[in-house]
Image (cartoon, rainbow, N blue to C red; front, side, top):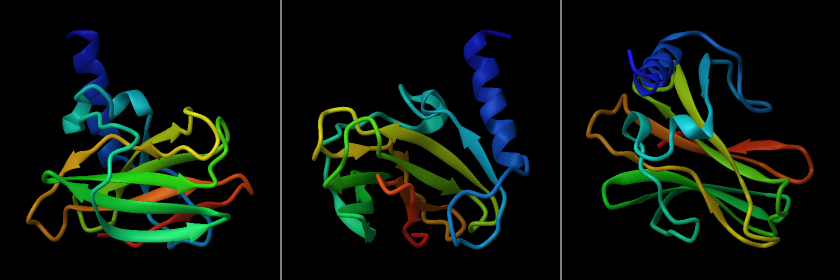
Length: 152
């Protein structure tokens, strides 16, 4: 088995496993963590997008001078953080579920790396007509809080 197949297999196994809880003050549900590399460069069906990309805002939440949003464009969903971001400190990720939120894969975090006040996006995953296939955006802000949108 090639290294890429091992990584993809491990990420798929993570989706099925029970993990730790992500977030502060959120409902308890299992999650699987994936490194940003498990969601970049086409891994696991994700595609890279520009950190300046914008789409239709499906869900958003503001915290500590930042807006964390779940956006859709071109048949794909992605997370974005923007506002008073702090380079190297704040980050964004997208949770993706195929079972209505009972378990999910955390894609990221992706750390703000283009200077203070710049935006950052997660990798993007295709949308589905299934009501079990859902996304939410989460961000880590300078005050140490994790904030997530509602599922979309």
